[in-house]
Image (tube, rainbow, N blue to C red):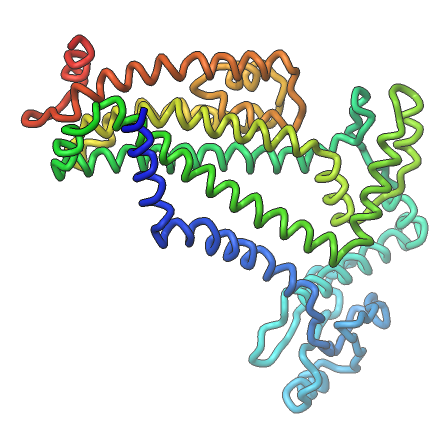
Length: 441
């Protein structure tokens, strides 16, 4: 046991001291947060005001364009005058020309500009107003439907809530789908990343013949388990730092947007009062439509993150232990990087299966495909984390966890049998037939 602890200490300290560990743990998440925050900040920045001269030769659009805070529409008499103003007056940014009708309904319009191309916001507003004015004109002339009547017809809509009668809460399925995808992707990437670290570390020591010196002091199984557990602690340290940074970010957001979070909590409390059946349905019907950000906060507040955090730590740790032992066996089989692919492919295929079947699981989180993938030990770390936000029966969670725990000793025994017989193997190229001979001793 003392030898295993020494190997664990060496693997942990060596990796935590590396600059790359801190860059991946702190700098990369901060850079991703900044990258996602920049579009939001730029979207809130007020746009530059522009002036557009409108030349309507069709007679349909004259004095119909509605100016906004960012765009002012100015009716002009002739195209020549408007183009002259565009060239000479800096405050005129564009000219919209609608030619005389060759048919009953105008089919073309032209937006003239100088050197600077019109912004996407201007193009979108001009196009939208053109379509709306033309539509309103056709409706009034042909069908005798006014703009107000049309707005009443098209503006009438109902909001569909996904309501869970068991919990008495709004389902927020869209938010849960995003959260499920993020959790399963993180599990997939971390298992692959830390498992690959185990494989590369063992392969490098074998290639450099350092392992021959190390095995004079420790047994092969102790060395393998020390590397696997040591890198697992590195992963847990990384997750602890990410959790701390995320908690600080959430506290900062709550402090800076206390009103928004308070409204979301009140909305959640209204929903939680509902019990089941008609009472819950009546209360949900009384909830007024909320903004996108408020709905996002409500959806996140309605999720039981304590269960998600515990399940995430469990499936990461034991899913990693399951695969890390197999990656360790692969590392002991190869001498060169070119040999990795033929042995890593059978190990990574079970991890890729739930990622490839993600659309099917997204369509039916409680369907047979998602259920079986979340129970089978080699696919359960990813599939179960995908299903957790939607709610999983306790017996399925218990069965999945039990099978995963049961398979870890079996995979560890299989990997250690290969590891202790292949770690000093050199000479001829290792094939699958060689692996079977090594298993037979």
